[in-house]
Length: 285
Image (cartoon, rainbow, N blue to C red; front, side, top):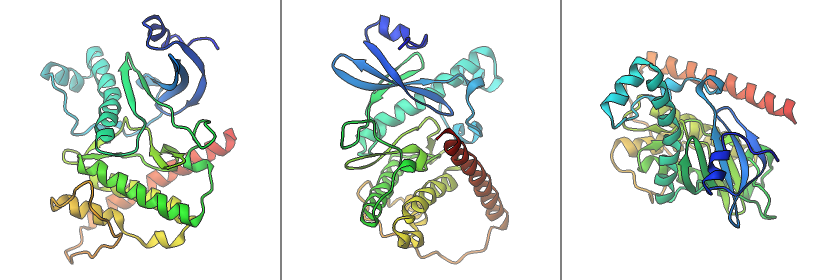
């Protein structure tokens, strides 16, 4: 195929030998299958801000740190230089998260570096050696659903144990390899300690995944992993190997009506966006 202009510099530098074919095009990036020596990998080409359809970026970027004070000021002012720095910060958030999560034992694609807005990473395969499918495209047995749900909750816990929340986790952002689920798409990952939206984002991530797996194992719908995980985090009792139960006993306290309404509105908006994405997927099929 014809080499995309964005990838050509990486071929010139010898980082990529050949672009095999497009793999997918999402809301923030286009992904290609590429050959690097004898190995087939993915090249994720991030779209410019004007081309991205991912919304509410401000919610996700809250609390992100920029080492240079000059860059931070430029980003706040929204100058040309500042917008460029914001783009680089957005892209490197995923790269940094992939390295951090791989080290923490979370199953994500192994990263091989980011070059001029192009992330090279591991290609996830299925049992036949083909590109692994998204969860949205497969059916599971009840036993598989229970097993993979447990692994997913452990992955979410391990993410939080190193201070990160995915923020946009659903069956559209998880691939299925023979050993179980692989979490992908992390440019919107949030700092749990610095982002005020982290709690409800984690709850949404957990609830999205539980809702998916409960299609095949209905008893999973009654679990309360989100509340259990966050309570352990707030109490400082969370570790990568914490044995989760899915059971949570809330402490009685005065209701925060405004907070509850905000969460309801946020969940409603996400449901509408999710329905729109599902409809788009059906139309494409």
